[in-house]
Image (cartoon, rainbow, N blue to C red; front, top):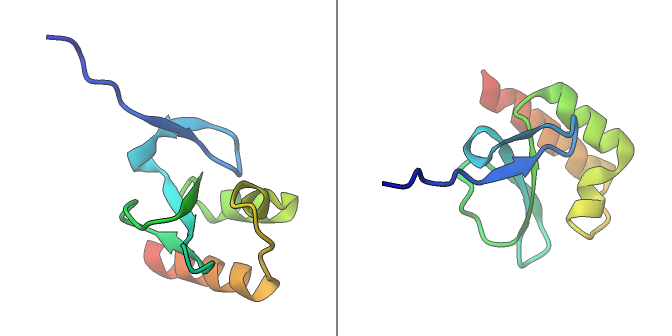
Length: 90
C-alpha cells in the first residue's frame, strides 16, 4: 500500500515547512473578519503560523499576515490575535 501524503504548509514567521496539522491557521472569513482558526476548518482565505508567539511577532513585524490574506490588518486586530494565541497556549 502506498503511504499517504501529509500536506505541508510554510510558517509566515520562521519560514519552516511543517505538516499542516502542527501549524495554526489565521483566516480572513467571507465577511472580512480576521481570526485564529484552531480547528483548521473555518471558511475563508488562510495563512499558517507556528503556534509560537515569536513566529507571530516576526510575521506581524514584516506585514506577512496582511500580505498573505490580501487585506490590511489594523493594530487592534493584531493585538487581539496575539492575546488569543497566548490565552490558547495556557
